[in-house]
Image 1 (cartoon, rainbow over the protein chains, first blue to last red):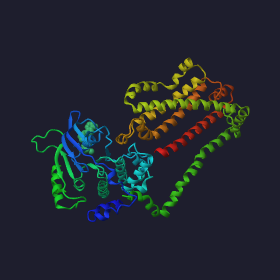
Image 2: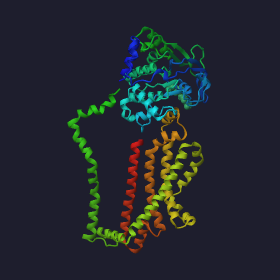
Image 3: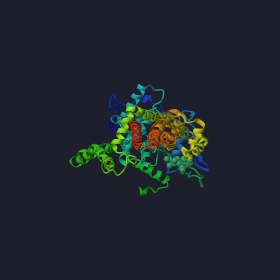
Image 4: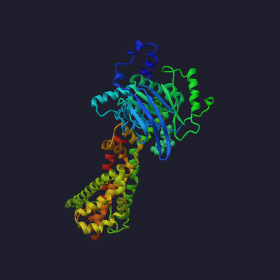
Length: 290
Length: 278
Ligand SMILES: Nc1ncnc2c1ncn2[C@@H]1O[C@H](COP(=O)(O)OP(=O)(O)O)[C@@H](O)[C@H]1O
Ligand SMILES: [Mg+2]
């Protein structure tokens, strides 16, 4: 499915010389077309009414980094992501992208939602075009969408409607739409959460390919510990601050873990197993039951 | 991942011989449906002919024979009155419907999209909707007179509410997630309206338009029954007063035909729109 690109990443570490010749000439946007921007959060908090959901989240995400945001359901992962994308503006603290504050629906970011959210009356091609920046000419836009559909392996489905493709394909179209504006920061909110296990693994590979080719900064919300360990440079665990004796209301940075090793990682490695155990216990789950 | 997509093609040969007769039967239905649907009208026509022409159960004043209605039509056609009555009625409906539906679309969009406009105006519109529309007739006659204007206004009132209600409630229920996705990709204002909200409400708008059109015909007859010198509604009252039951039945048949014709045309438009937008 995802074959040309995924074999490329798989082999590129072993045979870098071959890597440049591997992509077909029709393919992928070159990495220098993309910018990757840094994200800096200082003292970010969010309350809905009198209920504090997030408090005091401070960290810097480096350009090109993949940060996984992990946490139990309802702890504020989406809330944090929406604040970074400017979809929600009610937060306290400061969020800077590339040194300047986040704007409403910030153009430097793009969001991939948990649901594909494709317009049912538009073809896949036209849905992906929705993400294009306004500055592009029609021809340039077409070309970029064609490129992206190839990248996510949907070029032969371009004229179909969303209801005519599978859930995994719809999610790939949604990813292509998010990439269409060549975001400096890609915000993904449990993008694979609704997919079956096999499709999810394929989508993870695809995301790694996309990241390898675009180098964009990625904030990935997930509830899947293994997904986080497989994809991320660092894992941010949101939750009550365990260092405090009586944690205040609202989630904050419970752990921030650097994941060792180059991607794609060996899912069975002992080092990852130890981290998995640590993250599970951070989530309040006994890791032996997994 | 491709499995979901492959299913239809993969399944097709599998159910080959077993599936095809069923499919043929299903494909045969539209033509067959038309035939089946014609059975009852033909029987009714035969019964009509039987009780008038053959057994003579009814007098020509009570119920004229089918041929009498037909020749009444031919007579009116030859005098040129037929197309005059039909033309003026059609004209009133089209103008009234155009105005009423247009205003319904405009006001419904405004209230459906703007929370402020909705709060400000919805109670007022709701109060007007609560008035049975025909109750306006005396006031219209008093203010506007018996001319064309009062008829067109009455028809417009009839067409307005179904269209207004349809687009208003549809816009309030557009999938909020789609709208948010639109905003996240830089759409707002009119571009958002044209890209996400309007296409999403096309199906409901068309059902509102078809209801509005039916209402327009209803109010046409009401208007012409009350005060008119031409038109199919006038033909109804005039025939009643002259004891021309044949013409009266003819007028009813013509109203049904014109109503069906305009609705079918709107249905064709609807199908085209749904192909693009749904
Ligand atoms: N717009 C909102 N109004 C009120 N409460 C909200 C709103 N959005 C989120 N919340 C609350 O904030 C908490 C965190 O939500 P969310 O960030 O969606 O959690 P998750 O970690 O599952 O993504 C939840 O308890 C949710 O009910
Ligand atoms: Mg969430």
